[in-house]
Image (tube, rainbow, N blue to C red):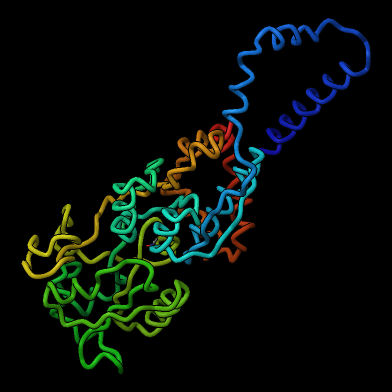
Amino acid sequence: MLKRLMLILAVLGLVASACGSDDGGDSTPTTTAAPATTAAPATTAAPAASEDSSDPIKLPIHNWSSQIAGVYAVGAMFEAMGNSVEYISADSTLVYTSMCEGDMDLVHEVWQGAFGPAFEPRVEEGCVIDAATHDAKTREEWWYPSYVEDVCPGLPDWEALNDCAELFATPDSGGKGRFLGGPVDWLKGDQERVDGLGMDFIVENAGTAGALWAALEAAEANGDPIVLFNWTPNFIEAMYDGKFIEFPEYFDGCKEDASLGLNPETTHDCGNPKDGYLKLGVNVEFPNKWPNAYAAVEKMNFTNLDIAQLAMYVDIDGMEAEDAAAKWLAENEDRWMSWTS
Ligand code: TMO
């Protein structure tokens, strides 16, 4: 990796010295490049058309670690191409409305389970472009640590979970089980699902991702049953054994059309997709405004390992998000340079 960096520096150095020798007046005929360019005045329009706007590319900072570290990596890639970027803290659902209003330019982690319902209508509307689908396959779902199976037989089936609902009660849950969901801007529809499937659970939203992991850690230390929101790829799988709850299989329309699914009166009477997509969305103006950056965007491709590593650098290793991004960039130079070149 260091070798490669040295090689790149060496190449840059060679280029610089080659330019220098042209100026140095050694009158080498290597400047025969000039006739080639002067011979093609018609092409002067082409470079102008393919030049990126100097406006900063506006990128969102959301509230989970892989995204925060990852957006700094994406931003650094644009900066390496000569673009400027601006980071803006943004609600992870309303961000698609912001893109349509021209206040945000790119979301690089569009998770199907959480954000498909906010993203897809904007793509259909034509103000957001579905620019790339990462190789990463995602799942976002109710989840429990494995020791819960000792006291609740039949897991991970949702009806088995419901039969043990009282095991998950808290002082505030009125005797029902407590599902600990993520911050309210993530997955919508947990309450609809509880209603639609007739579950004896209440839905409580954690204020932050950190509050989810703190609750898991505390429950595990005491051996208390807990069911909470989790997803993959994430750092959690490297630290805890556990499983996602198996709800009725997801199908197209489950979250939009109440008449479909087990309960004809509610939406969300299904689980989330098990092989969900991870997409990259951009504002519809992006390709015209930053054509070179857009060419890179279309090649960007994060794997499950990339997303898990970015999360682990922050949540297990305790790195700052910017440092995690720098580490990922250093370790994956060949890949991202092939996207930006
Ligand atoms: C969007 N998220 C990965 C937190 O589920």
